Image (cartoon, rainbow, N blue to C red):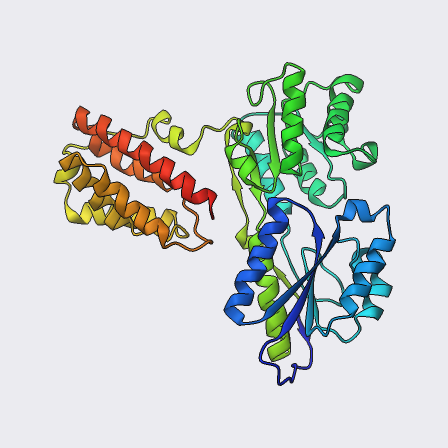
Amino acid sequence: MTHDHKPLMTDKSRLTIGYLDDNLQNDFHNNVLIGIAEAAAELDVNIIRFGYYSSHIAYKFSHQVHMVLDHISQYQLDGLIFLGWTQAGPMYNEAMFMERFAGLPMLSMGTIFEKIPSVYFSGDEYISRITRHLIEEHGLRKIAYIEHHRPDNRRDFYDKEMREAGLADPALYVSADLLTGLDQDERNRKALSILLDERGVEIEAIVTLQIIEAGYLIDELERRGLRVPEDVAVVTYEDSHDGRFATPGRSTVYFPWRELGYMGCRYVTRLLRSGHIPMVDQINRMGRVHYRESCGCLPHYVQTGAAGTCQQQDIPLDQAADEVIEAMAAQLARRHQRAELNFSVLIHAFITACGQRDEKLFLQPLVQQMAGISNKARINEVIASLRSQLYPWLLHRQDDFLWGGDLLMQAQTLVQERSACL
C-alpha cells in the first residue's frame, strides 16, 4: 500500500522539513537526529528541529503541547517528520493535529497511523528471540517481565515464548499500572519488591524494556545481595554506550534509532519530490540482539578461546599461503559487512609486524583505515574476530602467540576508542 501526495512544485533551492522531537538528553534521540541530518545532507534539504519538554513532563502541562504546535505553525514548511509517540503528536491529539497541519505532507517515525505514512521498528520478534535465548541457551525458567510504562504488544511475544516452553506464570509479570507515577529508579525498586517481597517469586531472569532502567534494576538486585548474572540474569531493550561499557555489559535488543531517522528523512523527501512512498516501512531488518555478560554470555573475545574452538595449525602464520590469508579476510568481511575495513591489508600488516616485532607496522594501517570509516561503521568486535582467525596459526610458536596477543590487545583499545566516537 502506498501513500500519495501531489509532488511539491517550488522554485526554492532547498526543501525545508520540520522535525518534532522531545527534549531528552540521551543516546536515542541524539541518534535519531544524527540519522535525519545524514539523510538531509545527502538529499540537500533543510531540517528545522522543534523540541519541547519531554513527553512525561508534557503529560502534566498540556499547554506545552499547544505552544510547540503554535510555534511550528509559524514556519513555511514543505513537510513534517515527528516521533510517533510524542505527546504533541497525533497519538494523543489526532483531531487537533490533523486539522492544524491539514495539507502538509507528514511522516511518523516509530508509530503507525491510519492516515499518515510511517517508518517504524517492531521489536516484537526480538523480545521473542531474547526470551527464547534465556530459555534455550541458559536453561532459565523463572523469567520475569517488567512492562514498559507505555504498554504495547511486546508483552504478547514474551507470553508466547513462555507458554510454548511451558513456563507461563502470571506471578512473573509486573504490569505498568502497578508502577504508575514513579521515576525510573523508584519504578525498578517497586517492581522487584512486588516480585520478591509481595509475591515471593524466586526469579532467575528479568526482561526489562529500557536499558536505562536495566541499570537501576541491576543496582537494586545487587543491593539485595543478588549478583548479575550469577543469581539473576537481566536482558533489556535499546542499546547505548552505557550498556556496552557497563559492568556487566547489558544483553539487549539493538533499536535502530539512527536508521529510523535516516529512513524517515529520506521517505518524506521522496514524498515531496515524487508524490509516492510506501504507507508503512517496517525496518525490522535493521535490528539485532547483542548478547553480553548480563544474561550470562561470555564476551565475544573470551568466548572463542573458552569454547575450545582454537585448534593449532600445522605451520606458523608467516608460512600460510596467500589463498588462505584471502579466505580468512573474506570470512571476516562477511561477518563484519558494516566495518568498512580492508581485512586482507590488515592481516598482511599483522604478519609483517609479527615478523619484524614492530607493532607500528600493524597499528598504523589500522588507525589509517579507521580514520576513513563513516559514522555508520560497526567495528567494536572486529579485533575479537581477527583474533579467532589468527590464534590457531600463532599457537605454532609461543613467542608469536604472546607477542601477537599483546599486539591485538593494543589494537582492541584503539578500536574501542574509535568506536566510541561513531
